[in-house]
Image 1 (tube, helix red, strand yellow):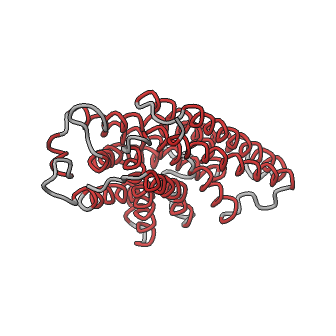
Image 2 (cartoon, helix red, strand yellow):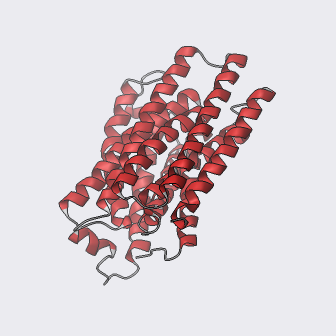
Image 3 (tube, helix red, strand yellow):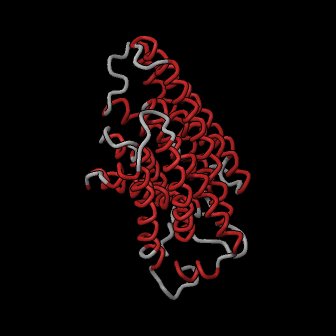
Length: 334
């Protein structure tokens, strides 16, 4: 089983996680004609395939070791398995709400609100589970990221007021969906952190596999429900999914693979004693900045913004960078 032995390696894994978590939603944005309810079936499949593939490679480097993938799965306690499964189920509910928010309000508002709320909630709970790292730097960094989220919200509000690009009802729906997604994002990780500790605990690779199964368990009924009761657009039938061209299915799978790679990197980094789940999760949730970069510079969600809005965005990115730096050095400061 591959595990990092230096802080630098763990830091690189956390940065990689942040990049993946902040970029996967582009797979859903690429084809605007393919509804997110349909996209999520393939996304969940890609997540599970990635978890299995990584578990059978990096998690199985020495088949005779007690912590190898199958050995650990066999020796795992029921408690740990249930915690990992529950974490995946909660994540999937929150994440599909976040994807719905992206389809309604765009990446620039859905990610800062959803991931920002998840960051605060998840980091506090994770620190209670495993208090590792300098708390002043960790929570100081979280405060800076919260300031960045507020700046992003102000920028988006001012842009909406200037362009009238969406109705108040649509914006309110996007915000509420983002809040629901943020709660799911904040609640899932403590279950993962618990499953990595105690008698019969799981390794990051077995956690990841059970987590992906849990995500699929809730993804299917949630997607079917939203197909019948959509947040936007007309209701969908199963034939709408089966009639999709292969490129559309491929983008969904690619989105799941990208998120899955970021997830295993984050889980592995969190298992390093000097890092812990609070720091690893908080760094990964820096994905808000990555997604905002995509939304601003690639998808042009702030096209035509005034100088005031651009200033707010610049301050947002500055706060994010300072916050992430504070969290990154937290494990090094006693």
